[in-house]
Length: 238
Image (cartoon, rainbow, N blue to C red; front, side, top):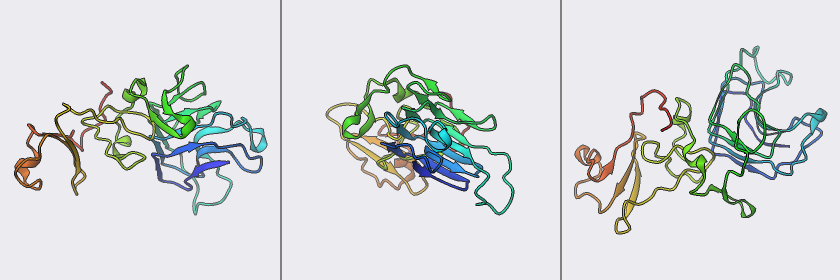
């Protein structure tokens, strides 16, 4: 079976949660798939393929994320040039082939329990309650701080629920769900804002007295935490 297919590219596949997928002997199998494509990006996805049965079409081992299949379905008007796909900040468990990146692809900060193509954790990712469908990471999970900020992953500004990822203020996480912010103190309220220009802010305490559209207020570091430069190059993980 296929969880999500985005063909042909370019496409962005982000913040998907794919669970309960099973093999199908009539089609190529992958939780996230692009076929006959180039420049498809898979960013911040969570895939759980445990108990999926392993093999499907033509006895091929089922893949977690595979963006480079195809060339035989005639869905493009011209020949397929060298594929340049991106796999960033994904969690893929329960697949022998977790991430099927090729040499021409970029693959960064992808994690698996035991599969190939990603960093092997050798343990549970520490989801909160996967049996109940809650695939947010526990606060103790190391994956909450294992993501990378790249020119591609920087474009994914929200998470599965539509919450702001706040890359300047919150740890860079992997998977479809962001890290929940921690209030500075129990006596302060916390508000998150996204302006029409895409800039994200987090305000703690009482709202400033001036209008939030006022430039001086928007840059008041005493109350509003400032974001990183949107035009900056990829930032290393701290």
